[in-house]
View: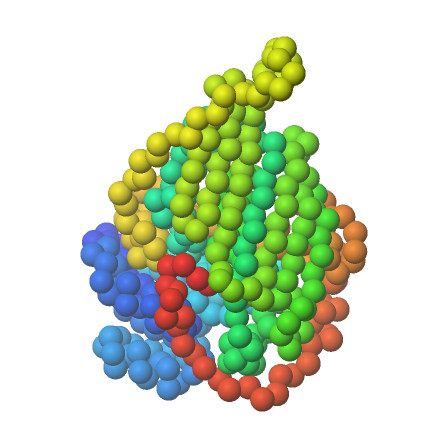
Length: 393
């Protein structure tokens, strides 16, 4: 998990193999080819036609079995862009074979599997990153800086409203999509992880959730809408909502602290600071209708590289030079923990404490998988989201 250069050979570039190139993986292939720090040396996909297309386009060897790619000797690192259930299996095998690993989100479907993934990274000492490209945007970098500086004070309330949209054709584009057996969840496991990652990054991890999940609009067996009341270790409260039933899409995050409030809406960041902290003003003020003086601070956003390419470059530089990871593997478990807590709470109609009871969630997931029904009327489409591109999942 640490940034330790590969000792087998002196590297000038990181040789990358991409596993899963039918969708987002094809975008990663393009980025890897364009970066100075990386070299695309192999691709892998279960679909032979997809493999053939990529091998011809990039003039690299192709595989239909990820184990063959891992043991080929052609790569120093793998990018994993397969359906979710396979992320830990492939990543653990890669790291045990001496390869570094960059996983698409989420790193696992369940926290128990995420634990095993992280343990393998610690045991092998390989670099483990997550493709959380939203972290690279100027707005999120600045918001993180504000919170880490202490200007917000102790967090007292959080909120995230994250509506998204997917049509039925999207869900009908693959046999694995929107099934318990193929995907392990719905909007929470697929569209929500990037937003949840930012929510956890800025607001922290709650200690308890009381959630609701439902399938409101689509003909799918998993949730297309979820919300939750949150409780934090310091007594703060929060609220979270996500769906694929709304348009226009967007997100709104509020992080309220003793010394101010941070607001992110439609990629715009605002920060309101208080001349006097709320606890101090509440006790010391004598005027009946008094309130703390509020200042909206002018913010200068950093100029920086953003998106998938920025995460890939940072991952490669971590291997080559020891650069600190923007999205380390150990952060990947946080969104899985939050997702599992919401599903467990919503399905069992009870508050759930975090950390989640691993065995209880595994039992629930196995029950849901057994109820999973083979999808019919599927029109397979393996197309990268054209608006992806940095903004959607």
